Amino acid sequence: MPEGHTLHRLAEELHPLIGRRFAASSPQGRFAAGADILDGRRLAAVEAVGKHLLFDFDGVVLHVHLGMAGSMFPSDPSGAPRSGVRLRLVDEKEEVAWNLAAPTRCELWSGDERRALFDRLGPDPLRGDDPGPAFERIARSDRTIGELLLDQAVIAGIGNVFRAEVLHRCGVHPSRPGRSLTQAELTCLWETAITRMRRAVRAGRIDGRSVYQQETCRRCGGPVTSWALGARTAYACAACQPR
DNA sequence: GCCATATGGAAAG
DNA sequence: TTTCCCTATGGCA
Image 1 (cartoon, rainbow, N blue to C red):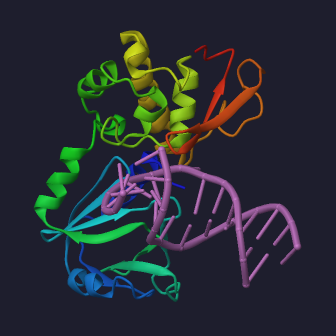
Image 2 (image 1 turned 90 degrees about the vertical axis):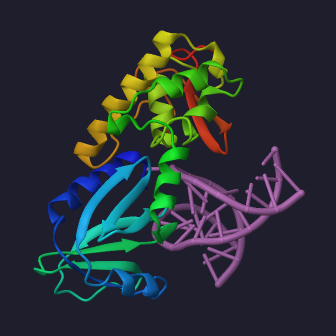
Image 3 (image 1 turned 180 degrees about the vertical axis):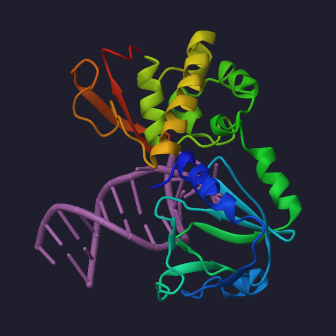
């Protein structure tokens, strides 16, 4: 299941296909009208921002969000399409078929909607953005840092796994109010997010989990506690992350 | 087959 | 803050 690294990896994998035209179809049927519009168009750009994937097909924007269950994967274009695939894109050389399954969003956008997305997202650690706006927002917030890290308007691309791991790495308890964090802690969170998310882009998965869904802390061996925080389960080591 | 759960997000109140 | 939507998966009956 995807956090920001998944989308950035997909954008990298799709990048070599820029310039080609695509045959678009919706084997599942729920995106038939959209696929008709995309069919035969040339891919001009593809990029990830936060957990969103944006395509430019001759000026038409395709917006994809995988949600919790979605996936996007290549397959042999000569093989039969899988029935559950919402959108299938086959390049004009018929070298590859890209399949989108179970997305929470798959829709065509105007330029205005695309701009609105960028306006409402915070800086993305994987895009080399300036973290300043996120730091300022956290520094004057009474909300917990655990909630703030999951808020895509504060920082874009972090999900529940990176939240747990980044906070643990920096020794910050998830329940601390944003305004209690020092500048050094904020910098640590941002730099650690960059490091861990880049590594996950390369690996294609998040590995080296120290507290997320762990019984004991992988660093000190102490017990890991978990509880609901910001509509998701938070994890922390009491010894490594004092309140 | 049913239900709870999940690495997500938005609308409603 | 609650409710809803989304779809896959795993445990259970």
